[in-house]
Length: 256
Ligand code: IPE
Ligand code: IPE
Ligand code: MG
Image (cartoon, rainbow, N blue to C red; front, side):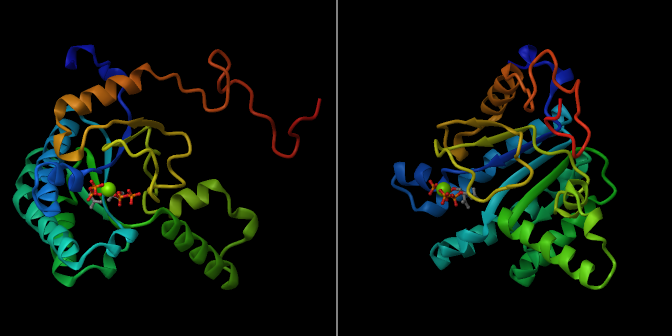
C-alpha cells in the first residue's frame, strides 16, 4: 500500500477523532476501559507511521470537554493511561525527533497529569520532526470563545483596532496558531460527526469516516485513509481548472 502512496502529496496536517474504544471492549465482553487501554496501541502505530512518513502535524482528539460527563472511574482511567503513555513513549518521541504538544484546557486537568504533559513538552521542545498534538479537555467552541475574549480585552485596552481583526488574526490566536489547517480529518467507529473538534480549522478538511473501531486502527488503516485522501479533488470553492485564479478585490464582490 505504501508503494501506491504519492509521498509528494501527503497531507500537511492530519487530525484524528479516535472513537470506538468503548464499543471495541463491549463487543469482547470487557469493561470499557479495556478499550481505552487497547486504543493506546493504535496511538503508538499512528504516531510511528506519521513519523516514518514525515507528516508535519498530527492532531489526536483524546478527551473532549464533554467527556467529563462519563463515569468518574472511566475518566480517571483515561487520565492514568495518558500519564502511562507519555512515560512509556517519551523515548520514541525523542528517537523520531517528534515534538509533543497538548491543546485544550490543560490548566483544568489534575496537577499530576499537567506535570507529565509539561515534562513531555519540555523534553521534546527542540525536536524538529513531526508535531504530535494531543487534544485534551478540548472544545472547538471553547477555543473560539477564548479567542473572542482575548480580542475583546485587547480592544477595550486600546491594544487592538477592530479593523485589524481578520481571519489571519483569529488563526494566529487559536491553539493551533501558525500550523496548517488539517488537510485530512479521520474519524473512526462509524460515527459521522465533528463532536466539537477543531471547528474553525476543519473548514476545508477532507473528511474520512471509517467503521473501524479505534483499537483496530493500525498502519494499514492509516495508509488506506491517506490513499483515499489522495483520490479526493479539492476545489476550495473554485473549479478544478480555475481554482485560485481569480480573487475579487474586497468590497467589490459580484460587481460586473
Ligand atoms: C473514544 O472512544 C475515546 C474517548 C472519547 C476518550 P469512546 O470511549 O468514545 O468509545 P465509544 O464511542 O463509546 O465506543
Ligand atoms: C469524541 O468522541 C471525542 C474523542 C474522541 C476524544 P465521543 O465519543 O466523545 O463523541 P460523541 O459523544 O459520540 O459525539
Ligand atoms: Mg465515542
